[in-house]
Amino acid sequence: MEKNRSNFTGSIGFIFAAASSAVGLGNLWRFPYLAAKYGGGIFLLAYLILAVTFGFALMVTEIAIGRKTRLSPMEAFGSLNKKWKWLGKLTTLVPVLILPYYCVIGGWVTKYGAVMLSGAVSESANDSYFPSFISSTVSPLVFFLIFALLVAIIIFLGVNKGIEKFSKLLMPLLLVLTIGLTVFVLTRKGAGAGVAYYLKPDFANLSIKTILAALGQLFFSMSLAMGIMITYGSYVRKEDNIEKSVRQIEMFDTLIAFLAGLMIVPAVFAYSGGDADALGKGPSLMFVTLPKVFNEMPFGSVVGALFFILVFFAALTSAVSVMEAIVAGIDDKYKTGRKKATVIVFLYAVAIGVLCSLGFGVLSNITIIGFGILDFLDFMSNSVLMPIVGMLTCIVIGFVVKPKTVIDEVELNGKFRMKKFYTVMVKWIAPICILIILVSSVLDALGIVKL
Image 1 (spheres, rainbow, N blue to C red):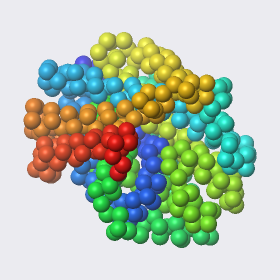
Image 2: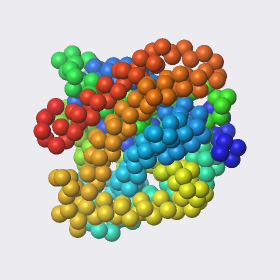
Image 3: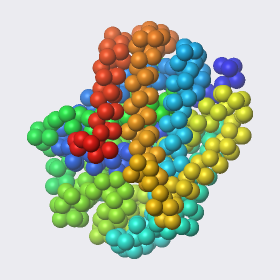
Image 4: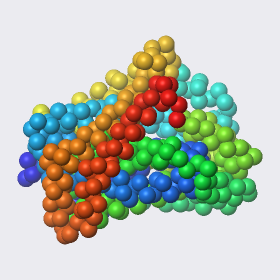
């Protein structure tokens, strides 16, 4: 298997690919919203501490599993311990659920990018524009198919010519666009109040809710418990330093998330009269509130177009990593070859994605335990399966195959400086924290307990 396994050409290619996966929609709208909601500086501090501890331990674990086994999660866990082979299937189910609805949202972003480029920013700022768009039948499907096809083409090209080459191009562009837009927003009149709101620590919000929110954001912000980092880890060369690479991936991911907040929160403040409630949540922030901001802003069409190009790139790089985790799993298990597996996964994503898209229109009357189709897939993947997979991964490494398995893999390139800390984290702290996230998020989503 190892002889024929594709590899990233070097550590830079891997870092850019993994960072591109981590930097997605969660960084660009969910992170700013949560930071504003949970006390600004306090949330940022909590997230940073969790990223360099909790996030570091889980990412090292997943990348080391991938590189050691040279397999995607579908087969990797079985390679470590045959009794835990089923965990590979459960892990692969996470991207299987995420891919269709993520491509639907990617289609929404593609649509808004086209609208902004056409100069129709005032039209998109209307309150009825977004609900009217997603509830229609044809237009959302067209943009969904365009987005999904682009993702499939990149996967079809392979690890080096597709994923790595694409990531090396887009990751620097993402960083430049984010910095440029942030600088522009910070020079606008009234942005200072938003900066203070975003960065000033509010100790009144230092609570278990703040920690849980930061921990939950960390999970999918860093592409953890989705099988992605195991898959990408399987393409990492033995001579590349895992510990150093993880630190660099964390730096890119946290920097983009921080800058996104520094761009969005002050922009909303500056053009909404300092109304913190205008930050909204989820789609309403990106597709309703921000077009209003761009409409009021000088050079709004240009800024709006650049912003949605930025979001499009971020969504595309993340969707590529999600699809790759599934394609690699199918290829590893059934030996289909990359191209055939890509076609199979693309057709699956289209079939389920169509249902997700129509779930806001002609299929809006269909609900599953109170959720619409897209929201149900999101709930099952993010609130249920990802915490379960993360917790079970820690249990397998901590108590079945032992932390030494990961430590030995990391130390192929020198001393693992944090191995004692890593052992405590993966055996005790991480699984306990993940269990708390799982229970609290499920109870909150079902309305049993409101956090």
